Length: 125
Image (cartoon, rainbow, N blue to C red; front, side, top):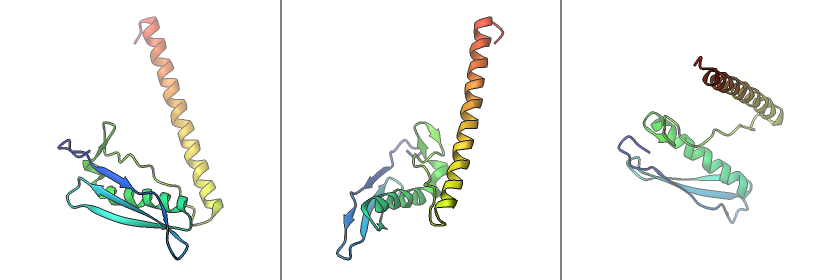
């Protein structure tokens, strides 16, 4: 959503196989001025679909400061894909880093929530 409250509409078509045997997935973005369209390639339908989501995210990034997703300013609502173009070991290393950071934040939030609940129960918070 943009600051005016007008929605930004994303449309991603089902992947289609081309005559050449590769796949493509078309997308459209409305609500950011001119209509933005594109097509993302892939070796199969799933890769084309993933590439379309990544392409839409790239199209939205320049507008990120003006967009809101689920009430959170600056959020696009599309997670960044973990790249695998440097090989599987690189991707697995990034995934481990992401998982570790996610666990650290979840633990911190759980501890903070438990501390707040304890403060509320004993009247110290």
